Image (tube, rainbow over the protein chains, first blue to last red):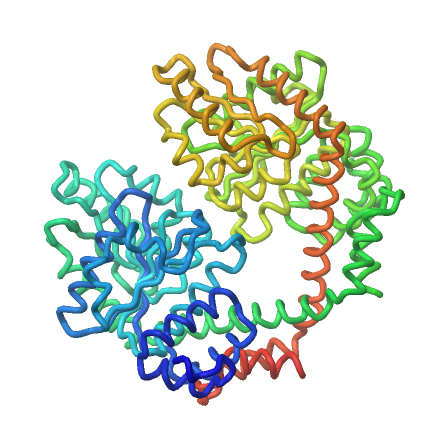
Length: 317
Length: 317
């Protein structure tokens, strides 16, 4: 999307994205985040190139070192010549557009590497659809040819889980003292994780915590045929990062060979279509007239009409 | 809803609820939670009696003592002769139907008081609509004549915030060492809170933490004309609970006199109607035929059709 490419020349833009043009990718991501008018057409045009990247979700409680771990993993992938996109999502932050990544991800030294694209996303005022938009941002990065896409979230709330769930491989990061396995189970992390990593392995209790995780995972059994491993790592020294990368690759292989990758993606695509359709029929229903009727109904002095009755009335309008 | 009252005799059931019949209220709440067929008609019938109760949301990070605080507050209200309903929501729990309240709220001694109704809600398998159902459960309690309804949540995730936001007065509970005001701001608690309470005032640092909150609140300014107070309390000894109750009453008075209560409730009612309508039009759209068409579209070997194109095709069906 150089100065010569107008915003509405979708095919030209898609071509530049497929070629990996940094500025065009960056600008397309902004359009997707803003849900600009043309963004759906753009994503539609990019679709044939979407699906090649392996998507990794990194989740876990605040303070366990997700950013540093993500950076280490990224460096390992780059060392193998694989390109990486990072979508860092913070539902508690209203800042967006890359302003925070220098601070939060501390990846300044990677900013000049053309094989890396890092995008930070905040709520931009509205939390609704954040998980959905994060997936679309990943689609642009996927179409631009990135081999790996990492979703990184700040916490373990529902939105963070939604974002993580859209990944092919989910890494649950924890650390000694960050609560025990029972707490992890409460937060829903045990159910979603494919690989469990006890970070900060230099702290005492790391091996013990890994053992607890292994016991719990043994009791829980396999996840659709996948034996979920637990390991220790140290993002500062780099210990265990290579092992984590190998596990990610094993998991991808498992997903492909078992047919689960296809199944997972079909499931997400179905959810997505339903979401697009539901949004569209709601938009169509809530025209100016119905919106005004709703406001009028709410403003009448007769306050005793229930929301169900008003809904019924609007529905029949 | 005695044995003689069939589930479909809505008017009779509504009458029993208005009379405060414990068993009928309990059963109606279960129907609302399960989104039973007749639950909308029941809520519609109850609507004229909904809106009298003052709704209080108690939120804050895990471990700050929300359950004990809620219990203390409840006892104070009871001491004044006011009746209280508690809706305790745990989005991480799948248990529901009162099984956990003995354990979590430790309110066994209150179970025999007819002026108290406590309901624990979990996700029951699906997290979607939990905040919405919690509001409807509160409506039943409201219609049954409870003067006060307290929403208590376990954490500070988005769903917890959604539930809390439906309250008239929001109490943010914290404790010394549970993170500083900067963290509270990050979690979105500073924005939603009307009253800030530093619990466990016997711990060192409680007064200091209160001062930090006061400073931040001073910088933030008033919330629509309400000067948000911070105070210390001790749920174990009962210190500060009476002061908290007085602040709740002041806030209610403020909301009523400023017209904000009306405005707040109009806003929630509008959201609610939109939700009911959107659910209904989506249910109507997604008939058997479209669902099958979607599955067929996803199963075709031609995988390169984008979700946007499939949505468009379904939309035009």
